[in-house]
Image (cartoon, rainbow, N blue to C red; front, side, top):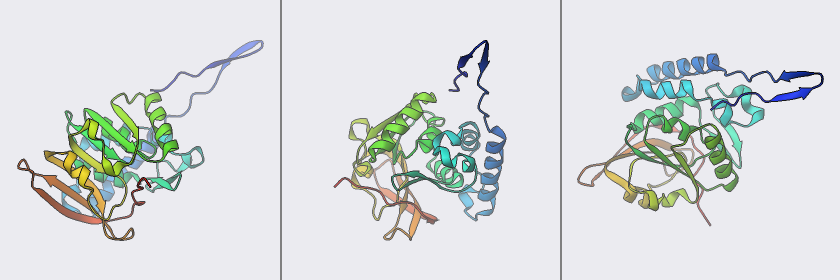
Length: 239
């Protein structure tokens, strides 16, 4: 939610601060770049990204989710550091993972790794409720405040170890993991509803991760498929 500029008294006149640019033209170019990348990336099931996913990217101001010093790069298709050894993923990867997750309007979604809150904001436009877990305390606090200020009322952020999920809010229709792991965490599989889906960067080494889609059938059987190589920071665990 955009706040109105505050009027500051500068005797003898009242001058309003210039409104911050909304940067909508930059977002339009970013979305066009992301859609073009998807069409040429060679991944058959994601050549045409879901229109609602692209609409969310178009509407949500990514520059509010990056450090001030990186704001000028906010709409370039590249990851950016957000401090504490963490990054915000490039827009194409955010769009791709959201597209593959296939969130629906009535879904309850768990996100492991809140970061700056951008991915949670995207998911909030596509699902009923988003529960996001972040282990780095300053990031969790900043993301929660940021999402609240911007009006994302259906996102809840928790400080904790994402490996354990969020048992009190389980089960989940969809689970999105935004950090690399060498195996699928058992608690996350347990908290995924039958008929649900998880998208997770999975691999034995940090430099050999595969973006993996895991489906749990109605009967509770697990099916997974690896789609493409990706790079993510490793999932941080509690000591």
